[in-house]
Amino acid sequence: MNLSFPQRRGSGATGAERAAEPQDMAADLARRRRYLTGFGAALGGPANVIMQLSLPPVGRGVVESVVESGSFAAHPVKRGRTTLTYLAVAMVGTDEDRADYRAAVGTAHRQVRSGPDSPVRYNAFDPRLQLWVAACLYRGTLDSLTWLYGGLDDTFADELYRDAARFGTTLQMPADLWPADRAAFARYWDSMQGSLSFDPEVRAYLLEQVVGLGPYRPHTRFVFRRANRFFTTGFLPPWFRAELGLSWSPREQRVFEVLLRTAGRLLTVLPASLRMQPFDYYLADMRRRRAAGRRLV
Image 1: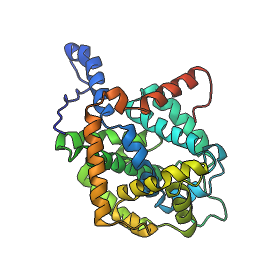
Image 2: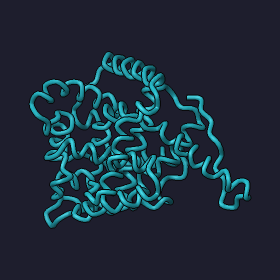
Image 3: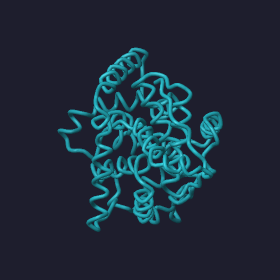
Image 4: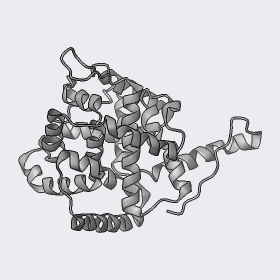
């Protein structure tokens, strides 16, 4: 992707520069829209969940959660909608959208904390846990764009990295907790490997529910389970595959790359409005729910 973008203006802009600020905001929004593709999210989403849950406090927080309304095992479609809405709000929503969704997610997160019998301590409001989740979302976005469209040039990669902080700051993660640049992020990512593991319950949850599509109806599992396992395994970095016992051959890697690159070529000729679905739909749906006074998550 050989893309260039306008430089951001500082707070000390002249009158002429302030008049141009709405154009800058539109340019920023247009740039961030390029990061999202519904196709990539659908194929890579399960792998991203696995990476997030590899940090034990996050994994235990999910499998022990008492928030039934947000449970993937109980409501897989609703959970998928909530997650995709969050990504849309974080990346292309307004400040008002982000504040309102932060409050709504916070209502559920207040109940996600370890109990006296939990093997690890956790609290969904912990900024460092949110940093890890945001890091996984960034890594998943980067991987999707790379597999679909090829390597990113430095300008595009830097813009994506800076904007990906929104995956954390849309919750309670302070902006200064996000690593300063891509090199700092690489050091953070590598440093986390010693903290990652799957206990037997989390591993079973991921293999049965996320990889095996356990919450879905039998006919859905019959049609999609094999493809879901293939793409989930393909999107996972090798360490995660090995920890879950997911086999992966060089031939499967070649097929994965060909399929993703072919899909990427098709996506480049589609209008942006189609590439962005279902993100645009879910963002509009969130705003309709808010206007009607309904729950957002």
